[in-house]
Structures are given as structure tokens and as C-alpha cells.
Length: 172
Ligand SMILES: Nc1nc2c(c(=O)[nH]1)N[C@H]1C(S)=C(S)[C@@H](COP(=O)(O)O)O[C@H]1N2
Ligand SMILES: [Mo]
Image (cartoon, rainbow, N blue to C red; front, top):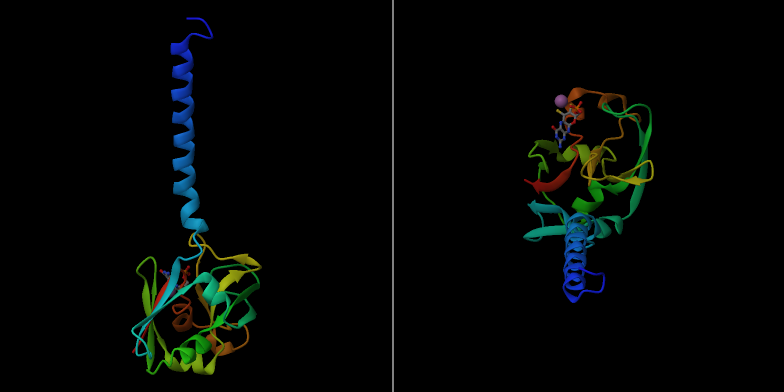
């Protein structure tokens, strides 16, 4: 076969398309979950004024954002968390109830008394130290208590309510 043999250039073209196709599918697989802006990251249901409320990251970032500097039971030193107040979100949805069941992507769930969000600035953190929280690292949402601001929150009963990978709140 010579270099300009029609058969060999046909083979090259097929191989080239094959490689392109593989690259494109790999790109689609790995980039899609990260890039989709319309992904619902939080659902709120139960005793609220609508059936179920769903939020994308952008929608949660559009709520008033607060910053909270605190240590945690699982990281070293102080972290700066940024996110929305759970109180704001629940008030906006007309939530009425005594407790909130918070559920995580890993099926962890815990009851958060409504009094916690009334009495303390508990936030749904979307970023830590300026970096968006990803599902690999406590994200997309981490329930953060103002632990360093209130001595009584340095307690295992409260640590259990720091739900990471939060994806659902049910008011009841
Ligand atoms: N998504 C999720 N969040 C969670 C947990 C969990 O297993 N999954 N464990 C909780 C418990 S029991 C505690 S004490 C704190 C700190 O967890 P760690 O010390 O095991 O990391 O996170 C809480 N948040
Ligand atoms: Mo725990």
C-alpha cells in the first residue's frame, strides 16, 4: 500500500472519525453533570404553601447570601461559609411545622427542630472559603450552624444536624 492508496486514506478517515466520536462521548459524559445550569439541587416539600419547591444552584444563590465564619467538627480551623439562611428559604415558602427532615444524597437523614432555624442563623452553605461545595466535598449544600458564635451548639446533638450533601427538606 502506498500513502495515497484510496483504501488506506479511507481507513485513516474512519479511524479519525472513530477517535473523534470517542472524544465527544467522553466529553459529554464528564462535562454534562457539571455544566448543567438547570439541575435541581434542592427540593423542599411537606407543610409549605405549594406541592414541592425545587431549586437550582443559581436560584439558591439568588436568595440573600450571608457569610458565616466558624470551625466545624470535621475540618481544621475556621472556615468561611457562604449561603442562604434556612429561615429565609422556609419563610419564603410559607413553611409551617415543628420540624424539618433534612435528607442527604447518601440517604442520611436527621430531624432539625424548627426552633433551631428560628433561634440561630443556620445556613444552607453553597461555598466554603470561596470555593463552591461539590458533591465530592460536602456539597452541593451543607447545613452549617453558627457553632463558634454560640457555645451551646458545640454539642454532638447539633453536629448531627450539619447535614452535608443536602438535597431535600421536608417540613412537618
Ligand atoms: N450527608 C451526611 N451528613 C452527615 C452525616 C452523614 O453520614 N451523611 N453524619 C452526621 C453526623 S452523625 C455528624 S456527628 C456530623 C459529623 O460527621 P463526621 O464526624 O462523621 O464526619 O455530620 C453529620 N452529617
Ligand atoms: Mo455523629
